[in-house]
Structure formats: C-alpha cells, structure tokens
Image 1 (cartoon, protein in one colour):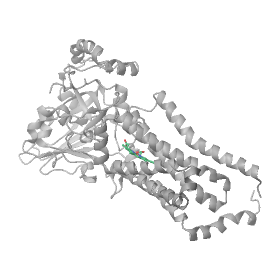
Image 2 (image 1 turned 120 degrees about the vertical axis):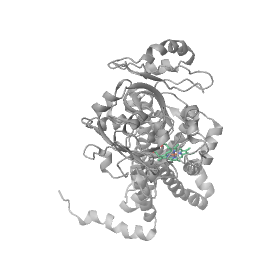
Image 3 (image 1 turned 120 degrees about the horizontal axis):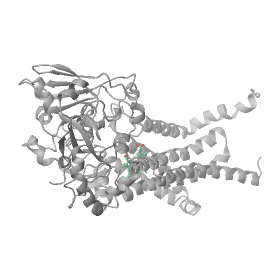
Image 4 (image 1 turned 135 degrees about the vertical axis):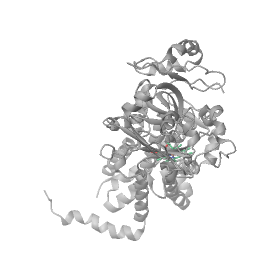
Length: 222
Length: 318
Ligand code: HEM
C-alpha cells in the first residue's frame, strides 16, 4: 500500500538506525579512550569492547530478516547490510588493536599467538570470512555472483559460530563444568541457535499467522 | 640477573617512610632522564597523598637490555585486581569489596604441626617484624605490576608452629563470607578459594605473608588483612584474605588447578616457555606502560628459586 517515496523514507529510517547502532558505540569508545577513561589496562578494555560490539552487531544483523518476516516490518530490512558492515568493521578494529597496539606489529609474536592458541585461530578464520563478506556485499558482486552470492553469504552463520566458540574459549574457567563467567557467550550462542531455527521455512510458516493476525483481532486495549 | 626488584628492608615500629626510598631516590633521579617512563607514569598518577613510595620510581639495578622496573601507581595496584569472591570485574572490585569486614580477624594454623594456633591480626603484627618487599607481580592473564608490599616471611610463622616431619605441603584458605561477597553467592566457582605450596617453597625467603602495600594496610580488594605473596608464581597462587593455613602430607587441592588442571598447574611458576591456551606467557603487559615486555623465567627470580626445582621437568610440572 505504501508508495515509493514513503517506502524510501522508511528505508532511510532503517539506515539511520543502523548507523546509530553501529556508529555511536565507536564514538563513545574513541571518546573514552582519548579521555583516558578505559581503566588501567586500556588495551584489554578496547580489545574486549570491539570484540563484544562486533559479535553483538553481527547477531543484530542476522536478526533483521527473521524479525522482518515474522512481524512484517519491512522498514527494517535496510538495516541488515549496514549492521553487517559495522560488525566487520569492529572485528577488523579488534584485530588491529591486537596486532598494532598490543603486539606492536611484532610479526613473530603474532604468528606464535595465532598458531598456538586455538581461540585466536578461530577468531582469525571468522575475521577472514567477515572481511570477504564485507567486500562482496555490494550490488556489483551480488549481481555478478548470482546464486553463488547467496551461498557465500550464508557463511555468515559459520562466522558467527566461530566467533562464539572464540568467545567461549576466551573466558577464564572451564567450559565443560561451566565454572567461570560463561553467561555472555552462552546467551550469544542461544541467540544464534534461535536464529538458525527461525530460518527453517516450516517454522516461519507457523509463526507468521500468530504474530501478524493479532492486530486486527484485538481491539485497542487501553 | 641484575634486573630483579627484590628489596627487603625491615621497618622500625611506627616508621612511616621506608628506608628504601632514601636509598633509591638518588638513583631514581639519575635514571629518570634515560628511561623517561617513570616521569610519564608519575605524571599520570594523581597527587599521592600519604603514599610514601612515589609511583613511577625507578628501582635500582634496572637498566641495560631489560627495561627498568617502575613501581606501579598505587591507584592501579588497588584499582585493578582479581578477587572473584566479589566480582570477576577487575575494575569494580575495589568498590564491591570496600565494606568487607576484616576486624576482628583470626588465622587458624593447624594440621601436621606440633603447636597449632589461632593467630589474631594483633598477634601477627606484634610478633613478626614487618618489612618492605618490592616484588614484580605477574598475573596469568598476561599483565604485570611492581608492588611495594609490607609483610614478613611465611617461614617465621611456620617455625613458630613447628611442622612435623610428615608435613610436605602447606594449604591455604580464603575467608568465605557470602553475605559480604557478591561473587561468592553466584556459585560460579567452587569457593572457598584454596591454594597450596610445597613446604620448601613456603619456607623460601621470598615467600611472604603481606599485611600492607605502599606502607598502608592492605585494602580489602588486595586481600585484607593478610595474604600470601609468592613473587615467582602467577598471581592466583598469592591467595588473599587468609583464614586458614594447614600443613598437610599430600599436595592439597587448589581452586584453579581443580577447575582446569591443564591450564593452571599446581606449581604455576612464571615461565615464558610454558604456554597457556588463552594468554601469551612469553610476553606481558606491564600496567602503566604501552606495548609488551618479555616475561622472565620465574618472573626474574630464577637465581633464587631454581634450586627448588632441580631435577624437575618444568614443562610437565608447570
Ligand atoms: C584474528 C582475529 C582475532 C584475534 C587475534 C582476536 C583476539 C582476541 C583476544 C586476544 C581476546 C581476549 C581478550 C581478553 O580477554 O583479554 C578476544 C576476545 C574476544 N573476541 Fe576476538 N579476536 C579475533 C577475532 C574476533 C572476531 C572476528 C570477533 C567477532 C566478530 C571477535 C570477538 C571477540 C569477543 C566477543 C571476545 C570476548 C570479549 C570479552 O571477554 O568480553 N574476535 N579476541
């Protein structure tokens, strides 16, 4: 029912919200950093915040399509791509902090870390996937690759899985007995599982009516 | 190895400024021009009221190829530390721990000893001459500090209670007061926190029970009122807020070693050659500096403590 200009305004809102979600934390982090308000171990703080933000934005980007389909909110579809690009940006910053600030481009040490520590290797693979996806996210590549593009971009789920494993392994404690601060990565894992379940077409079919038919049935309740 | 900050200076009762300051200040002035880092650190630290050891002071014996050791600012030592009974957040622990009640306090010393005894803190402070010890402290998480502790060798206390000939290990236990410890209520970890040392390690002159830092009583987050400091081992061995010390025959269970024995060995000696799955043990971030410095074998105390481990494969018994 919406006409073209109306829709593009809505898309605009989607895009603006995505830039707010992605950009504001970056500005805050940069501001805190120059103010020296990131504590006594700023390298660790920035490393952790960029990592968490990358994962958070990645999961948000993956939630866009299910939310749009189930709740029929088409306006948010414009958020998917910028959120994904921000996730890749934060992941790249996360790696840059590691390589440039923490290890001061000491290639030998960086190589030793990547080759000796499984959690770093997992992060590295995830980062490579995210960078390839970011580079091919433009319409040019989408057109050129056709159906292959769709398959390529499904590897974003693999990247999310690898990042969550990376997070689980970065926590101090024991994963198998769950002794340690495992709540945040496990919540992320739960969200990813939910997103994967929501991709099953049959599940989408059942959910759609329950959510979208409520509005006309229910009279204004207050 | 000349780069070790290890100074032992007995304090006269009631003495406020430790003697080491007078001795080292001259050297400090000399080196500060070369190193510069000290000045940088000192200028970052807020005007330190009543803290006699000026943060940023360069320790004697420093220089050469190994970068100088500089006292870590009081604010960082007390504002950034791990005490999981309160929280896993190193930077909010000071607030969460500030109401921890440490008076009255008693330390039960028992097990395989001739004369078991419960010491009150007053007993301990009256009986054992407190001295200043400046030690490097290396956390298993890959960061490090240089801290001026006040305390006394654990050996003095053990000699008083007389371990029997069957005693081969010393087990330590931290207070567990869930009403005052937010983190201890969450049951994320099998508290009470426990640690242990081999008897010869416990008797080593570097091993101290600390009651203060920067010449002030220990703040709660740093393990008030009394804690262990074993400078050649990763920080988690230096158990805080001790309520019990038991002499035992067998290697006692310790918290981190119980949770993840493949990552946290019983010995937990600082060793750049034994890697950890998460953190680099070859290098470390010195709090207050940027970049990394090389981690030293036994945290720089190899000369003193390597004889303890003669004939042992340190990559197996890590
Ligand atoms: C080469 C690639 C990567 C390297 C070298 C790397 C390195 C690290 C390191 C060293 C830590 C531990 C920080 C600490 O506890 O002190 C960490 C944690 C983390 N990383 Fe990465 N990482 C990489 C890729 C990624 C990617 C691609 C993401 C997300 C998209 C990510 C997300 C995280 C998260 C969420 C944490 C946990 C933060 C926390 O403890 O709160 N990492 N990473």
